[in-house]
Image (cartoon, rainbow, N blue to C red):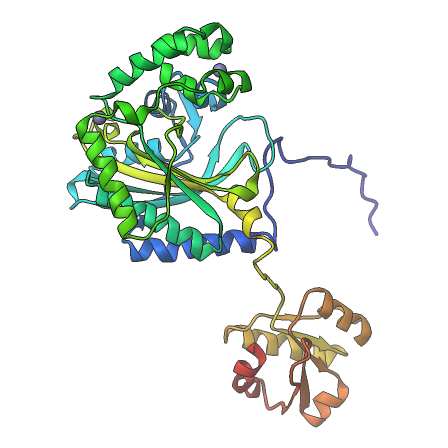
Length: 429
Ligand SMILES: [Zn+2]
Ligand SMILES: [Zn+2]
């Protein structure tokens, strides 16, 4: 053997707050994605794929300069041309950018889309919270009728239950519109103003810029101090109030159990009227699995015609721990071929190829090891069936497909490779 110069040992690791998603865990991800896509199809939502990077101002203006996301959590950096770019911290702002850029509002309303992919926030990593996290989201545009709000919440409910989630709480509220927000804002300022010195420095700064942000602060002292602040629902204008009442009526009609949570706030500036959140009591403090709301002013803000919109996003990392134990994911080839000797080895190679082209997952043993160790390997990789190809089998043209789960073994004659095709349904079983 050639004398290879020893390289220093590699010690690279994923960045803090990032994770590799490996098999068999990936099967849970695929399960969620498949179920979601099936339901999106029934509701007419079509997939869009957008860049994970946008010009920074796509986020700063829409999410809000004073939001936690923009102030603290964005991955923002200059590219080599000196432009400020940001890894998307959420999906709606890039979606609206694309919606306006491609004039999607010209299509008949509602225009309905879904997306799935990674988002990035520079947060302190903790349970179920990653710096690169994955969301599946949906957006419906061009209709301001509360029937659409109820329908999209009902669709979310259908997705989550088809994934296998149970015991979820659907909470809704209205956060008003630009007409009713000024009155609410001043009521809030009066209430908070009296004890402003008990809030964190961020909140004190936000008090003038955007007091609603204070409702969103995660500092425990601030959570405590804002208790008892005026409920937004009491400040809704008649338009917002009617919208909210209709939403509740339609959710009842669609049998979506829900409760009102007047303290529900969205950490993004662009929301109007309907806001909702789905949570699970099994997730501890990071209990939200999905959240969404209406954003009727955003398209106009992005330079498009005034167009209402509503959407939600669900967090993959929050959902996965809730279904991991109940999902019975067994991975392994449907057939494992153990050849004994060089002639059998070649035969195994061509039989495997033949069966794969017929849709069967087949693995073979490559090296010339004992039958015992080949069987052990078949077991370790979870093979459902095993066939031994030795001298006798080749001579007598007879093989036995052994079922590893205690099912029926199949004896059959080997004529070319074709005979196995007729056995496919049996092997699969
Ligand atoms: Zn209003
Ligand atoms: Zn605060």
